Structures are given as structure tokens and as C-alpha cells.
Image 1 (cartoon, rainbow, N blue to C red):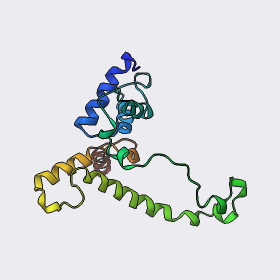
Image 2: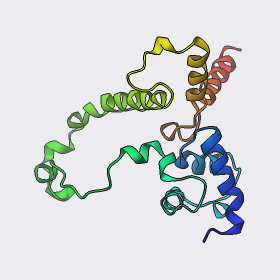
Image 3: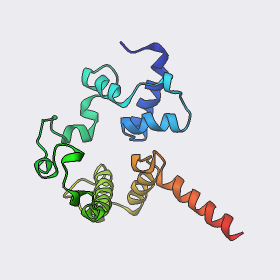
Image 4: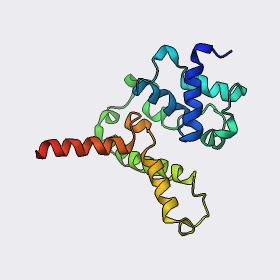
Length: 174
């Protein structure tokens, strides 16, 4: 069962999950980053998902939009495994060439854009015209997106990093 000494953390997670629409992973890592809790006072992301699976807290699987879209884990064979070899020693020397992996940077940019689109889709469903939303509604979505801690930003928000960069620029200019 859930430890009573971890109840404050679970309440923190439920509050940020429902009110701020944070993911369970963001809740865990942001609590540590902000020093709201120490490691011994929290449970890991996997445990939070297990609680949702078992219906032990307010957060249920139906509340997890990403989890509902994903299919259960299946074992799959990586298509390049045979080409690249089973271990590093078996890989052809051409694989070690950095040029082979140059496409990753473009994939990361595309991935980030699709992630942001996924966030916006929480508010503007596919098929709905964006001009059916007021400027105020669009601004609220923008504020929420920019105040959402992101894993790719080491659980900082875009707003926080923007402010840090402005501070850095002003310090240099003075």
C-alpha cells in the first residue's frame, strides 16, 4: 500500500497533474529540481503509473492521454540490428563515422515540433479550426505551453530559460 510518509508528495503530484496538466514524470523531476521534496519523500514515475493502473489514487489511466494512445509494449526486432551487428565489436567501421548519424539533429527538431503539436492538441482537437478559438484562448494555451516543465529542458520551463537568457544578455550588456 502507499506509504503515509509519501502522501504529501502524492498530493503534490495530483495537484499539479489535474490543475497544471503536468505529466507524472514532470511532477517527479520538478519536485526534485525545485527541492520541494527529497528523494526519500517521493516515489518514482513508474510507481505513479502503477498506482494509476491499479486505481490506487485519483489519477486513473483514462486521465493519461499519452498512455491511452500507445499500444502495449511488444517485443520487436530492430531492423538495423543485423546490419549493425549485435555488439559494438561486430559493427562495420563505417558506423563509427559521425556523418552516418548526421540526420539525428533534424529528427530532434522535428520531434520537438511534433511534441509541441501534441501539447496544443490537448486544447485544440484535430479537425477544429484554430480561428474558432478566441485570441484570449490562444494566449492561455501559449502561456500554459511556455510554463510547462519539459524533460528535454531538464524539467525547466521555456519561460524560465528565456528569463535566464535575458538575464545573461543584460549582464553582458552592462
